[in-house]
Length: 405
Image (cartoon, rainbow, N blue to C red; front, side, top):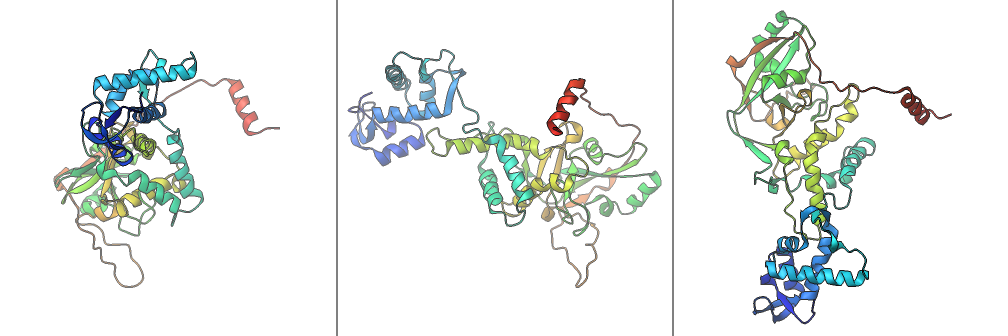
């Protein structure tokens, strides 16, 4: 590659390369188009491309180097081939006959986890809010802003927005189980109040809410709804459909798993943007991970804080989330509507408190569909089981690791 032959910004397609050529180049005659524009030497351009290739690609069952250069830099095929040939020749000369980055016969693929930190991000965040500070945690808030700040711009590979608008009339199901059918008729006397969320100030902590914060947990079908409340055999379940009275903006984790990072390989933040996209794809599974009984206090803490952030600090503010049901093996879909979007027409009054009466100023968002109420008798429960044999030596080894002499 020559330092006396130039390429102008108009002959590259990547926006970051264009900007860098304009910023660092001078007016020269472009070898590719013959125009006098801001240009850099083909040697400098080749060095920038080489840095991106070696940082972001590895040998694998993918495209060849000329095709990758053409794609990431936006060069004409002939020019991309020329750059590839010259990079290969230079690398071979430097390596003095040894194998170089450009010698793979298999092709190249993008490195899926550029700096290897994706799998530690969730654990680091969870540890921070569990063991350091839940409130006024600057480290956690900065991480949340980095991960969830650009949600409104995120798109799937099909071009779909990950924030989904659920229109008026969209229905969700809720259910309660009681020991006898006679108890079920108590619910039927005021179904909206009995099947809707508990009033503010009441209720225990859940996956997406702290204790006393009322939210609407529901499912998109009755079967998933019943599975989620885990009714005991012999009990009776009362379920009903609730429909939206106003449009809501919900984060759909199915779509989040298909999000792509539209990041230039020449963007200094490329690795961070790729890591974020990869993390978001796996996040839907993490947020639906089962929490064992007795561990809810700590197990739900990270998801509660994320829900609070999306409801109160995100831009735009979200009304809820759609996520997979662990109780159905991921087949069903759950929904949570945050506190400000969870009020049901006919809700119970707020929990009693000392002092002036509390007025619920939240807009009425949901209405129970009266002819959707059903009673289900739970006759049996099935489990999806994975069984494996354990050898005695495994138990002895485990004992030695946990209880050394």
